[in-house]
Image 1 (cartoon, rainbow, N blue to C red):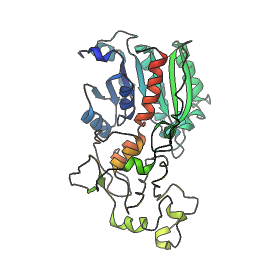
Image 2: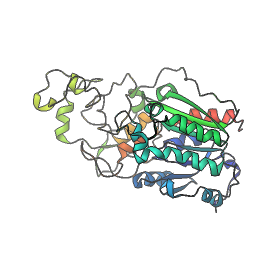
Image 3: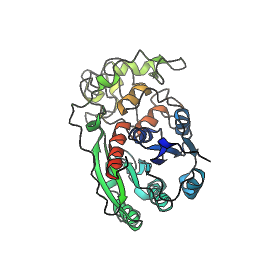
Image 4: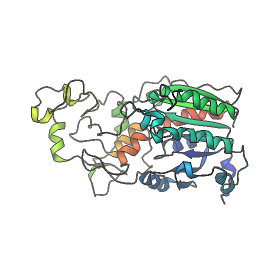
Length: 353
């Protein structure tokens, strides 16, 4: 059984933990994530590699009895300070299938309600993509309404906002829905933008050494260049801050079927600007070098500390690998600074001091 410490007075549990971005931010805000639950094997490896007095369970959420968490961690119902998670976004993603709850993954968000019913945390925090606000259940009811009804029946008010990670010291334009549920009648306000000049790609990538080739030891974890030689030729045609379809004098053999509307494909970052949203497709091009970003560089754009080591496969070319590779683990993650800002507001609103 888990043995709590005095410093663990604000315990939290993480569902759909992914690579651990939300866990990092929540813990930085003063909570202590006791257990991270995730199903994807490479993500579980990442979580375990970085666990500090945290238990990691690899299990399908739907098969887990939440009461087991109370038993194993010695918690009374209602003793949990925060339940947090980022359920799969693919059914609601702008570049996904948008099937909502017609995709089996789309119903997983309601696991947050089921766990809340048994655990009765002081607050719940959920992250999703913006399209989630417009998605409907298979019966036609807006998912937000169904989620709100579920939490209201348990005595919680649901608060929702769209936050941009770039407003919270993340070098990336990344809009995400954040949902916070607190006991009925409890005031809650989302954090306001920091007001500081947005972090830029150049600032985020500063100080990194040259990356190494796949299979070599890197001075900084996960700083590995996976760019094939054939792709470097394509990258040479793209100027800083531009994308291949907008680049002049590109041979048809390189351009292929791209049109000028293909603004998210084969894109080189600008050192003076925040990055566009890091996605699960092809990694962005480095601002000045003729290569893709390394997993570590992508992680820096998300606000991960360098000490957070990514495990699992590394994409060796522009195609896919079977499991969640390191680039996609990063792309799916919640930026830690954004999670920290919201979790800090939760802590302050509930007077957890």
